[in-house]
Image (cartoon, rainbow, N blue to C red; front, side, top):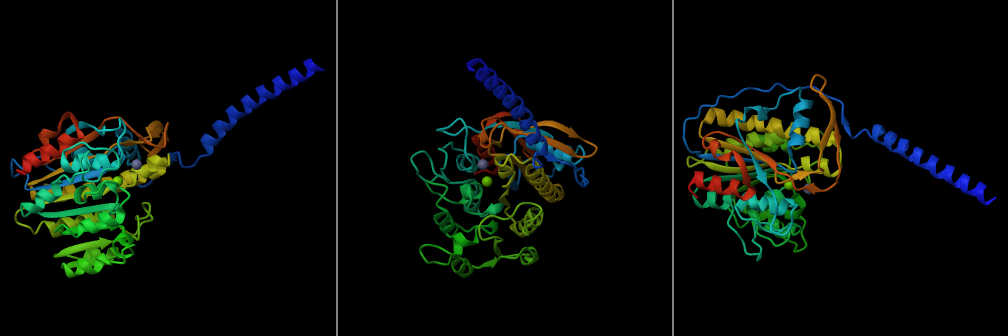
Length: 383
Ligand code: MG
Ligand code: ZN
């Protein structure tokens, strides 16, 4: 009896192991979020590599949140082997570690890129003593340049916030929104309406923005019609939706912002964020990552169009960190199929790519700290 029980138990354990192994495979195959099956590829234009100036008059900083090299290559495969990023000939790597963690979050990562100083995870434009640090955007403003922020998340979220706000904690969305009023930023487009308008302190900051001369608009079609003046585009209560569902268009918002900022004779600084590449990584969702990378790359196409025509504009494309430890375990350059795999639902520590185009681009090659990117931009702009 004892022996029989033992045998039965052993068989049960073995069968469960076999079943669970198969079951695991089945789940993996059936998981429709792991494979991007391909879509219509867009045409990638080639832009000239000769520029009017030696130093940039304008800087377009583009952050793909969580966009590691694998995410870039997933997008490249999905688009049939080419991206607008192909136009970037000066390429480096950025080390993203924060002061208190081998693995950064977007607040410390954003602050390193906006100020040139490393800080702790969660910090928005402040140092390790929670003292405000001047950002590139604020320096540009001081010099009389036009400034802008565009994001597919809430405009009060960590990445854009790092360029304009100074708060000890990234979750202080209403305080971050109030910090926008302390600046003279010309254009900002993103979600986060409720952090301005529906607040614990009862203030409606959209009224203050209007009093300061901003056109406060919520509809993408209205935003795209703006040709000049100050613009606050708040396209969602909180975050904009996932691409391609969202009504907010990152390429169109970028084009609109660039045309407005270009009217400043002294030049401009703008940060444009593809926010949700990171969220696709957190969700371990290959389709989400690919769609967001392709939307971001087409936005890069708009920036290139402007910069190539202008000849005095430097474009930097980078990430604040990698997300998901994404790997590609299959793909097809012809059909655009990409199969992703993820060992974690969190950020990882690896270096992220830095792509540079325009006057001064040659300074952004090699392995650098994330803070070096900000310092190099400040240096080139004479801040
Ligand atoms: Mg972000
Ligand atoms: Zn993240």
